[in-house]
Amino acid sequence: MSIAFSATAQRKIEDLVKRYPDPQAACIPTLHLAQDEFGYLSDEVVKLVAEALKLPEAHVFGVATFYTMFHRHPVGKKYLMVCTNVSCMLKGAYDVMAHVERRLGIKAGETSREGITLVEEECLAACADAPMAICEKKYFLRLDDKTVDAMLDEIIRDAAAGRTTTEIL
Image 1 (spheres, rainbow, N blue to C red):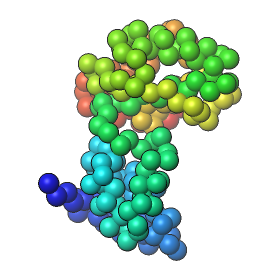
Image 2 (spheres, helix red, strand yellow):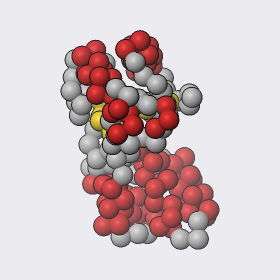
Image 3 (cartoon, helix red, strand yellow):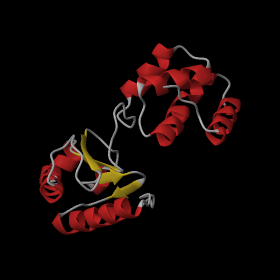
């Protein structure tokens, strides 16, 4: 099966390449665009990005596999990352993770029946507001049992309605 970027995505890639002195600098934003377009970065998508940027496929593969924000396999409608690094861990991140797992009926690395993929992340860079989680582009800060339930209610509602969780706190 052959894949191709949509005309809109192709224009965005052309604009990205123009913004940088070297096409290699457009790799990360183009991978984000590809992931938005195809859902995840299959080998075929990685090759497509490499061709679009005229970069070695090995380079694009290296970038796609280095960063945890890129998905190499299909994920749910929602991708929920819970930070368990030291600041979050000291403030109860493992309790937060256990609560989320119980509520969704899954373990980290799995996808719930509502279409929420749960991931344990090493650091999400909001240590002062620990424990925290991110779903899409929304940060959920200073989590406890009450705020975890509100967070999950919102994410489940958004997943059912096909909405993006985009408000950044």
